[in-house]
Image (cartoon, rainbow, N blue to C red):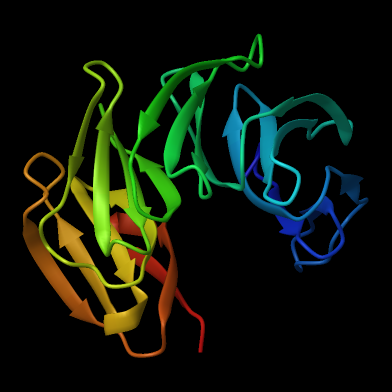
Length: 212
């Protein structure tokens, strides 16, 4: 969402587009090979392209591409936090911190496993590890990396909603709620159908996409 407009990534076409109120795509903006995830920072749209290892800035007002930087192997999830962009690198099992002004990687956090997506809390980032069935907390202020002990088989998406970290555990058909500080389990919901994408809804609700 950029100034009230929804944007979509079209992975097979290598473009992102705005969507109108009826969901119809607008003018496509070429961004690279296989765009997957997007984040908004200071009015710019940032897109990861997993096949060519880049993070690309799009001006949503003009539909033009600005900075495009090489961030590493297989960038997937991306989120804005504390003025910087944090990108999950699947192949490198890492989370990298990118300065949007210079395009430089200023920090790297080894999270291990097969990381997928990332969400921001008040002072930490939360990364899902699909292969390791974990949720990993990264605290940039201290550089500390902590993994959950509660298994989340097939951990895919993650969202921070009203003080709780939620992760979709595809292989067990559950959504797991974790305390952001201890990473202890505080909620568990059975959701058949391969739970995948998560997003915050209204009034503390959680929206969930099912792959099936």
